[in-house]
Image 1 (tube, rainbow over the protein chains, first blue to last red):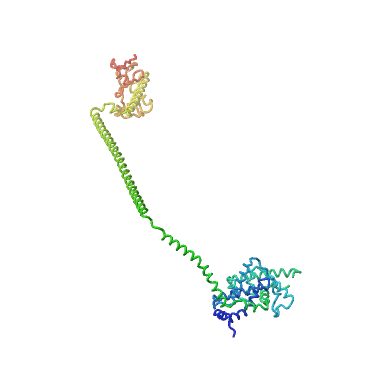
Image 2 (cartoon, rainbow over the protein chains, first blue to last red):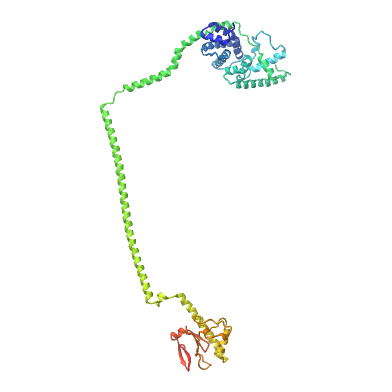
Length: 186
Length: 303
């Protein structure tokens, strides 16, 4: 039967390796995608994913059942990424066209060329946002976390997350209008 | 142009394609990521060093404290000589403090004594001054009493003493009255001269009096027994209005030396030539009155 992530985490705390393996199976894709959007290549993303799960199992004893496991894991992933950037101590080149590489084979929602182009512009603009605005966008829209979960991962208040999301979308609107009205630009 | 609104953008974001991981990522993770148990064991292995890192500062402080205590207790005791010297020094310091206190007290007493002496001297000086003042006051009282006594005596003995009875203002008034009286005599003498030419009688002379102006010059200013005559009605003239004595008893045409009028108070006289002379001149002898043929005549010294 399908056990919840929280129950599996409890079992993994008790020493059940199968539960830990199941949790890895459930979360390695979204965690990898989370890191892939922030890094410039697959190898760094895979490395960060491995580090994320290693850190999570090391801190598993501190996990409390009343917290959502997904939120807890994303918080570890976010801190793993931040620590990794600090260790590299140089600006990380991001892949601003991540959706073109290794996108899933399911039907894309944008079948019309115009829509695809417009969506691509939006994703590019998001990738070029400052990380204070970009991270809430990625967690809330790309990873489908709620406002509260996003706030918990980023250690911000929900109102701050809302403000940043609003600011980011207004920026996207303004930038995309400028881009749209300018002829000849991709 | 595409309609841009918040909803559209949010939809686009939510529909962002998920990124597919590498095919071998799952196996790689299962193989490389330690299980929670292994991770826990790894953590415990690291913990002694971690424990040491956590406790090293505390152990260091404790070690310093222990060493310090050991050093203090291991110090050799102070020798007997040092103790004795220390005791003597303490005693000397104590004695010095006592002596200092006594010196301060002594100075205080000395200062108090000096202040007392100074105040005593001041009091003595004030007493002497007081006695001198009292003697002066007594002398003044005595002299005042003597003066009062002498004044009484002088008053009793004789008020004619000009030094005691003199009244300068009254004298001035009397002099003025004497002058006015002399003036009256002069007017009367002139009036007679005028009337004599006309062979007038005394009554007729008196008729002239109203024409002499003002109050008729027939009352001596010093004669308080007479009423002043207004001079309007000559017939009202009476003895009580006239001060001056009409002395012409002889022939009706006196000569220039005949005394016509005389003031009984001032003794001023009016002669037949119309002149008037002070009574003081009679007193000092410059004018001699002689009875000649029943008439009083004046013999002037200059004559």
